[in-house]
Structure formats: structure tokens, C-alpha cells
Image (tube, rainbow, N blue to C red; front, side, top):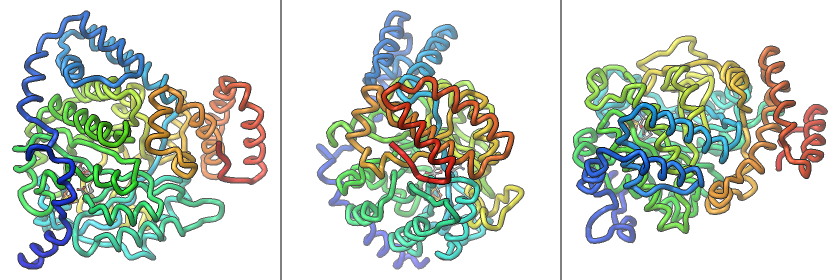
Amino acid sequence: MQAATKRKWIDDVVREEENEPYIEDDRDFIDDGKIKSLIDKHANPEIGEIRDIIAKSLSLERLEPQETAALLNIRDEDLWQEVFEAAAWVKNDVYGPRIVTFAPLYCSNLCANSCVYCGFRAENQAAQRRKLSFPEIRRETEVLVSIGHKRLVVVYGEHPDSGIDYIAGSIRTIYDTKVGRGEIRRVNINAAPQSVENYRLLKDIGIGTYQVFQETYHHETYRKVHPRGIKANYAWRLYALHRAQEAGVDDVAIGALFGLYDWRFEVLGLLYHTIDLEQRFGGVGPHTISFPRITPATDTPFNQNIPNRVGDEDFLRLVAVIRLSVPYTGMIITAREPAHIRRQAIDLGCTQTDGSTRIGIGAYAESYEHQEVERQQFLLGDPRSLDEVVREMAEMGYLTSFCTAGYRCGRTGNYFMELAKQGKVHRFCIPNAILTMKEYLQDYASAETRAIGEKLIERHLAGVPRQIRDALDSRLMRIENGERDLRF
Ligand code: SAM
Ligand code: SF4
């Protein structure tokens, strides 16, 4: 792209004035010095202090930054075990034995940004560029529906040729696609930050969650790893979800890319982000938090020598600390991670995961048997099929939920947060997990998965309160008789 064209595009997209209501004294809410000093100040937390903090999480209260900083500094192995047990307890108490599933759908890898860790960055000549047409998106969707998916997260690079009109058109196409009794019922988005006006358009289309990951909250590191393009603008990204909330998109999701800077700093960055959203939007913080680790990408030397690589042990610690810090927020673990890490992270607090994941552009319809790194943003650690993931989750005791009732029944934003904060999401979520898993088992599962899944449903039905058990049994019968999309 010509420099002048690019400049004009950037000027058209970025509306600095929309951030102004949120910036106080010319500063954003991430104070690097303060975060560092919190980490240093709590370098040697007392056992008693840690136990008090854990007790606060167990009462489902969000932690304050100094409390999270203390957890991040635990040195004692036995104390870490207490943190892990508490995290697992909180997860089960708030969300119950269920895991929500989805698939990513990469629509376009055209990108004018220069994120040093990403295979799609503009300078990467090895990446095969492609923007799916709407008929191609329909074909991708048909494959995903025929695997059994009901929830997608659509993903795009940032480029003038895949701007808001393309994003809106692709989502309409997905919602329009039906295969037999199947359809996608919730489309979440992971795409570049938008203006308030654009978010309003997406709200009208009926999107689920809008995700924007800050990647790193550390200002100086952010500048280094995003040297050019719109993404070089830290504040435009940091306030992306404030603008989304202002436009009425009340399910928003944050994330950090682990490996760019100190993991302890990033966990506190995520917490400050949560707190700022909660304070400004009537208690509604992020619907989910993501914490991807950098994985290899084609012709991307940065990833061969990751400056702040997070080992498995620290990764599981950060999962547990996030769980305790924001007990009522969903947490997403993706197929970037190998299966054994996913399993542990799910026990420790994650509430959503993907299955049958393909991240090459057009990869579902063209059914790549193998990962093709030139077509992908990065390499996956766990490309297993949805059927295998559902089976494994069932063996671990988890219902796989395809539920999309929440946003279609208005249980988003504040309404959802209030339920979560009181530990009441399972009132709706477990029955809906049972109903949607039943649909999946009837329509898409292998015989082996169906047998294990049906037994699991029987087991969980026993724990469903009497008041709704009859209604649930009757809906299950209707599903067996061919009705679909039943929910509470
Ligand atoms: N282009 C949009 C953006 O940057 O916001 C969409 C995001 S990208 C397709 C989704 C996320 O993948 C990024 O926000 C980043 O956190 C993550 N990501 C990028 N490169 C990665 C890599 N090499 N390994 C793991 N995750 C990566
Ligand atoms: Fe483009 Fe997003 Fe990759 Fe950055 S992370 S290069 S913005 S696709």
C-alpha cells in the first residue's frame, strides 16, 4: 500500500476524540511504574496474607491489584497447591461442571500492521494472503455446522479491504447459513478496534462478544513489538472495548499475549483493564479473558527467541491467579496449547475452549489434513477434532455446552455479571449445557462419544434442582423427537 494511502486510511479509522472521555490527566489507566512497584513491594508475601486473599476469592469477590500481586509472588510450592485447589473450587462454584465450546473462523489475513510475533504481519512475504469471498465464508460455515458447532469467533487481519463492511457482510453470511437442522447461533469477533459508530452497526447485526487483546500492557514493549500501522497506537487499542460498551456491545473480551513481557506484569494489566471497565460501565467488566502464549509462525524470527517465554509451570500459575482475581469472568484456553496443558487449565478455571480448530484461511472447506504454516497465523498445539474434545471433556466429568441462550435471551452485560457474581450462572447454564450437549450427541457425535456423553448427562441430571427437572426432562424428550434449539 502506498504510504499516502495508508496514512489517509489510518486517519479515517482512528478517532482519537472517542478516547477522550476515558483519559484523565493525559494518562491511561495502566501505570507501568505502579504495577512494577506493586510486584516488588509484595515480593515476599506472608502465608497468612495469602490465605486471607484466597478466602476473599472463595467468597467470589474480585481481588485488588495488591492482592493479585501478592499471589503472583508466592514462592512456596505448598502454597501454590492451595491456590490451585482454590481456583478449581471457584471455577466449579461459579460455572459448574461445564465447558463452552466454539471454533475460530479466519476470514482474511490481509493485514497492514507489523506485529513482530504474527505470521500475518504486512512485511511477511512467506504468508499466503487471502480474503474469503462471502460464498467461501458460507462454505466454511457449512463445514463448521456439519461438525456440530453453534458458536464461532470470526477473525480478521486489519486492512482497508477487510474493513467494517466486509466484517458485517461476513457475519450476516454466517447467520444466514443453514445445514439441515444446524446453524451458527452466536458469532463472536476477534478483530481490530473499531469506532463507536462501527460497533453500533455490529451490535445491530447481533454479534456475541467482541474481543480485542492488548497483547502487552507494558507501554515500551508495546511500542517495540508494534512498530508501524494502526496497531502502533496503544490508546486506540486500550480503549477499544470502552468504545464498544459505549455503543451497547456489552459482552467484551480482553486478553494478553504471553511471552512479550513479564507475565506477572501482564496479569496485573488484565486486572487493571477489568477494573477500569467495571468502574465505568456499572460493574460490567470483560465477559472473558484470554491469555494466549506465543507459538511459532512462518518466517517469524521473533518467535524463535521469545524474550519472556512463559514455561508450563508459570502458565498454570497465571491461569489460577486470574481465576482467583476475577472469580466471575469467563476464561478461554485455545488449541494453541497442547492437550495436556488444556486439560489442566480447564480444571484450574477455564470456561471455554475450541475444537476441530483450523486457522488457515479457507482451511475448513478445503479440509487440510495437516497444518499449513504459510496459510496460518501461527501453529496449533492441539488440532484434535471436536468429537475427541467433547469425549475427553466428558471423561473428565465436564458437559460440553454449545449454549447460545444468554445473548439471545438478553442475559448479557450487567444481567450476566450479576448472576456470575452471585455464583448463579449455573442456574441457567447447566440445564442449557445439558440440552445443547444432547443435541450435539444426537446429531454429530461418534457412537463412542455419544455413549460416554449420554451417561454423563444422566449423572448430571441427578444434580438438577427439582423445580426445573421436569421441564428439563420434557425438553430432552422433545430433542429426542427431533426438535432443536430448546433452552431456558
Ligand atoms: N488482527 C486482529 C488483531 O490483531 O486484533 C485479530 C487478532 S489475531 C488474528 C488474534 C490474536 O492472536 C492476537 O490478538 C494475538 O494475541 C494472537 N497471536 C498473534 N500471533 C500469535 C502467535 N504467533 N502465537 C499465538 N498467538 C498469536
Ligand atoms: Fe495483523 Fe492482528 Fe497479526 Fe497484528 S496480530 S499482524 S494486526 S493479524
